[in-house]
Image 1 (tube, helix red, strand yellow):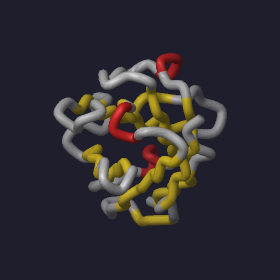
Image 2 (cartoon, rainbow, N blue to C red; image 1 turned 60 degrees about the vertical axis):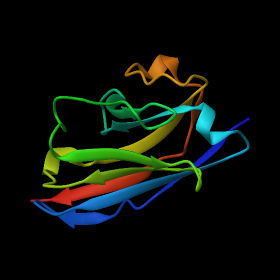
Image 3 (cartoon, rainbow, N blue to C red; image 1 turned 45 degrees about the vertical axis):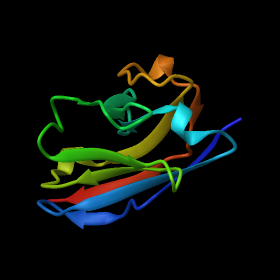
Length: 124
């Protein structure tokens, strides 16, 4: 069983930056593809970014492409989400997720373990 703990969410002004972190425990981190998702109040959980187990492939939603960067440090069992040029519509609870596969994927139904989420609020 893999446990995931996100951190780094906070209140930030529009145009600002944040870096979210997600630390994994209880499994062999380098065997898991990782993803970031977000959910705003009253909306579905949306895909943001994903990275293959070795970090060689990454994919992004169109809404964040060019502004957000996903990365991982397998030695630290940690996946990151660097968020730049933030917009108020980026406000949401951000979740990291792990998939029992080396292959990155965008669908939340393909992820097996989820963190509790971290709140990111962008003020205008």
